[in-house]
Image (cartoon, rainbow, N blue to C red; front, side):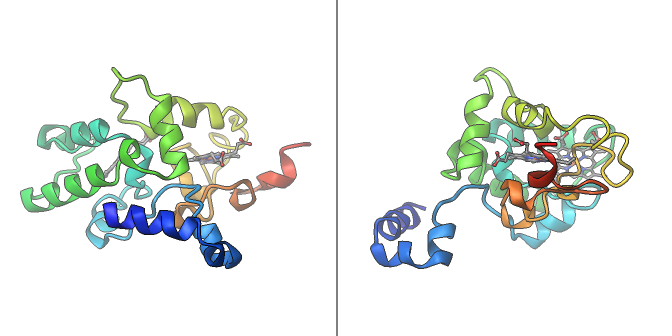
Length: 182
Ligand code: HEC
Ligand code: HEC
C-alpha cells in the first residue's frame, strides 16, 4: 500500500504522466476504488448492486459482516461460510472509506459523525445531501429505479468507481447534466 502511494505521488508530479490523458484522469482518484473481487461481486451482488467498500467506513463493514448481523441483513438472510465471511470482511475493511485516498470516499467518511456507524450508504450525510434533487418522480415512482439503493440504475460508470455528472443517466428522463437546469 505504501509503495503504491509513493508510486502514485511520483506519477502525479511527473509531467509525462500529466500529459497522458489516461494517466492524468486515472491519477486524479475522483471517485471510489472499483471492486474486482469475484467472490465479493457474486456474494454481495446477488440481491442488489455490489457496493464498493469505499462507500462506508471500516466500522460499518465490521458491524455488517458479523455472523449474527448477516443472519438478519435488512430482513434477509445473507449468511456466508466462515472462510468467505472472513475474506470479504478483510477486503471491505482494507478498502473502506475512512482509509481511502479516493476523493468521494474521503467526503463520505468526513461527513459521518464519529459516534455513528451507518449500515446504509443511503443514510450517509454526504450521500443524502447529494441526492436531495432525486425526488420521488426520479426514484420511487420511476419503475426502472424504484429505490436509491439501486445506484447503477443512474450511475452508468459506477463499476469503474466514477460518479461524475456526465455519467448519470436517469432512466425515463435522460442525462442529469442536461435536465438539472430545467
Ligand atoms: C439475500 C439478499 C442479500 C444479500 C446476499 C446481500 N444483501 Fe445487502 N441488502 C439486502 C436487502 C434486502 C437490503 C435492503 C434493501 C432496501 O432497503 O430496499 C440490503 C441492503 C444493503 C446495504 C445498504 C444499502 C443502502 O444504502 O440503503 C448494504 C451496504 C449492503 N446491503 C451490503 C451487502 C453486502 C456487503 C453483502 C455481502 C456480504 C450483501 N449486502 C448481501 C439483501 C441482500
Ligand atoms: C435516481 C438516480 C440515482 C440513484 C439511484 C443514485 N444516484 Fe447518486 N447521484 C444522482 C444524481 C442526479 C447526482 C448528482 C446530484 C447533483 O447535481 O449534485 C448524484 C450524485 C452522487 C454522488 C456525488 C457525485 C459528485 O461528483 O458530486 C455520489 C458519490 C453518488 N451519487 C453515489 C451514489 C450511490 C452510492 C448510490 C446508491 C447507493 C446512488 N448514488 C444512487 C442520481 C442517482
